[in-house]
Image (cartoon, rainbow, N blue to C red; front, side, top):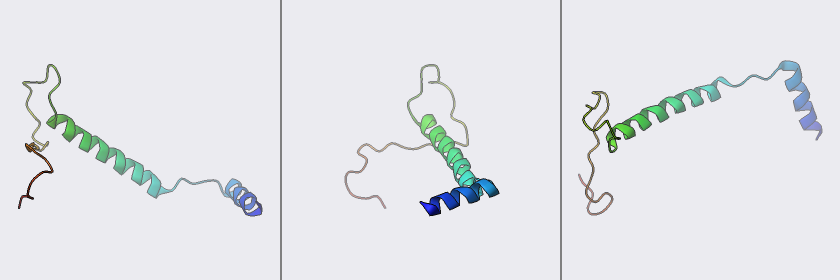
Length: 75
């Protein structure tokens, strides 16, 4: 209990600083989630009204397999 009180007192004196690495993880994670989500959305079935729209050039096309995960591995 003493150690907890000492740590809290030191944090109050010095001020707390949010680590740069934690901020970097949040920012990189958000960018990755948006990128992966966008690719998945563009490769999914098109919503109503988007059937005839063209795919942006930067989005890769992902081919569907008839039986994913079954059979012999492709080389």
